[in-house]
Length: 112
Length: 114
Image 1 (cartoon, rainbow over the protein chains, first blue to last red):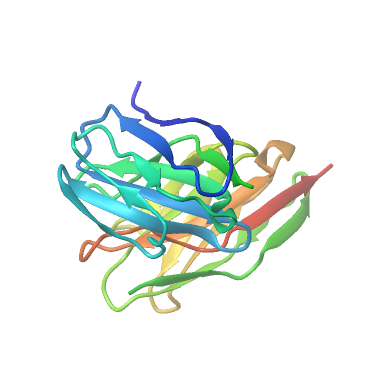
Image 2: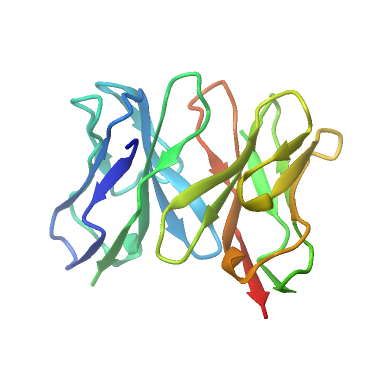
């Protein structure tokens, strides 16, 4: 089954404690991205990657890092989380030239 | 850069009534348009998309949308809603240039009442 898998689904952490949210897709898609969803703001792109070793900033990259060492994986790293990063995070992937994006189930992060 | 405006943050409607969720966009280049649905505690599911061709697009669960280039709109409609349609709906736009990000509207919560 074609899917995008994020882990964990829920995470509560403390300010400053580094964390990683994993994302994996099994569709051989070149393009992957991370979004955060906040009430009244819709989804905003954090980072994206057009292929292996090619990443770039989206609309709200501050406080986040990503890496793309393999085509299927695109982890989101918060080196020093802060309470304003409390949000619902989504990973998405799509094929080059194909505009439909497939989303993971989301990761609800709370930073206290 | 593109932007999306969803004009209604909440739309209450009675079961079996018709509904229209409004979406307007702005872009300096040609766009591709989407509607996604998010059920409680779930991810986003594609309802329908407009890439080119016929401006009336049919999607899953009986939804349809019409692309109107002159009015830069892509409104979502359903002739008769069910309780199970209660969810949040997002309009999104992307282009074939630049970083090709999906730009989302702020969402419309559809609340279907019995």
